[in-house]
Image 1 (cartoon, rainbow, N blue to C red):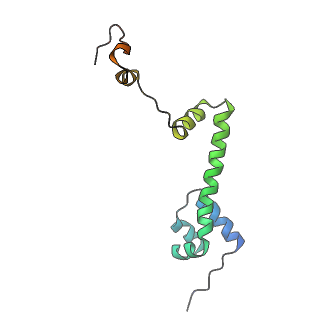
Image 2: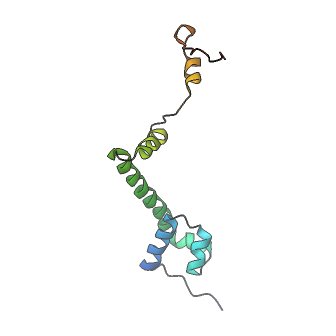
Image 3: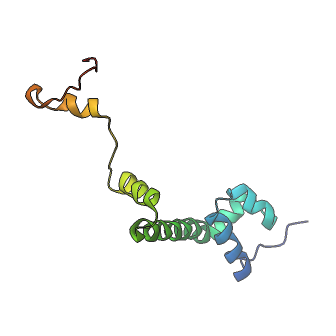
Length: 112
């Protein structure tokens, strides 16, 4: 006996979009819907893709608000490092990039 034909209802579409957005694997989503991962991808590809994108946008929006509020230094630093490509470097690395006449040596510190 053949399986009944899968119907992508609005409720199932919302469920797939939500589950994909929070990071559930296709196999897990298919298991909940009692279908194969192949059937899931065939009938609900757009929801799988959109759920991930929409969740990422929502998190990025929250991070942006935190980073620009002035209240969350960690979020601001994270944004600067990941989005602006800022990076920390120690003083020695900075000195090594300078010509010798501009290098600073602190008394008691061994020269490299």
